[in-house]
Each structure stands twice: as structure tokens, then as C-alpha cells.
Amino acid sequence: RRPPRSTLFHYTTLFRSLVFDKPNLLKVDGDTTLDDVLALMYKHNLTYVVVEENGKYCGFVSTMELMTEVAFGSFEWEKPNPEDFEVFKSSKMPVKELLELNPREQGIYCYEPTELLQFVFKPMSDGVRRVLVSVREAGHTSYRSLSQFDVIRYIGSHLSVIKGQSPVDIQKSIQDLGLCADIGKPETFSIIPGSDSALQGFRVLADRKSVV
Image: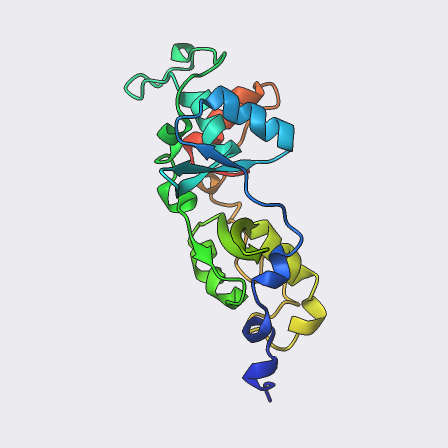
């Protein structure tokens, strides 16, 4: 017999449980150059920024989009020859130009701290990497980011609570749940020789829209 809905993990966990100790967003104006964005991310040890224009959040730009520009910024798709790549030295391109590289993943989703965590499962399963959660402090509203990793880590730390509540059997292996690629199909994964440069490897991943 399943426990009452009011006691189920995904019906009782609120966004505020995951963001109370997270730092506020690092926001940049859309005209900020990629050079400056990289410098800010390095300084604050972050992997993403939120692009803001006219007081409105337009989207996330992460290391994935920045490295895609590094790898393909001077690439002509009609001539897919590695020799046609130019070495990336620096860029004065405004960061807003990168907002259309991965529209689905870069879009802004906002949630209230009192909303249920379960509402984020669908967009994140569709590819959204992070969302915003509003926080009200001292009469001022700010936003904090919640990533896929944050959600997975939080769920992982509460497995004893979830056991028996989830429709997914968490005792099963990753393979049994169908969460890993079929290694018998070479097209489902990428092989990068150890002799390739890091930049060459990233170009392969970005070209095939792979993360790892």
C-alpha cells in the first residue's frame, strides 16, 4: 500500500529546500564581451552566467556555449576541414550572441521557493540544465540557480526516504533502467583518441551535441 500523497517526497519537497544556501546569480549585460565573461566566471569559479538586457533575464550562457564558440567560432560549415579552424585568441563578441546556440537548454524557467520540486522534473528531463528560484530577503527579491546536478544530489541524499515511494525501482542497475547507451551501436557514443588536443576533442563533442 502506497503512503498518503501528503507524505510522499515529491509532494512535500519545496524549491527552497535546495537553494537556501546557494549564492545569488552572477548577471552580465548582453553586450559584455566573451573575454570579460570568461574572466568573471574564472574569478567567481562559476560555469555559467545569466544574460540580462533592459532589466530582463534573457537566458543562461555556460562554459558549453563559450567553448562551442572557442571551438567553432571561425568555422565554415561548408568546409568541415580541421585545417580551416583558426586559433582562438580572444573575443570581443557580445555574450548575447551565444543565446541561440542551445535555445532549449539556455531558456529561463522561474519558480517560487514554495513550489514543489516535482515541477522541475519535466523541463530538466527535456534538456533544461538549470532553472531560477526566487528568494525574498530584506524586502528585496533575488534569484538563485538550481541545476540538474543539484536536484540529483539532493535526491541522492534522500534515497532512504524515497525508497518505496518512487515508481522507479532504485534498486535496479543503470543498464536495467535503460539509462545507458547500447555499446553495440557505435553511433551512440564518440571515441576521441588520446593523442588529440583538448580543443579537437571538444569540437567532436560539440559537433555531435554530446556532453561527455
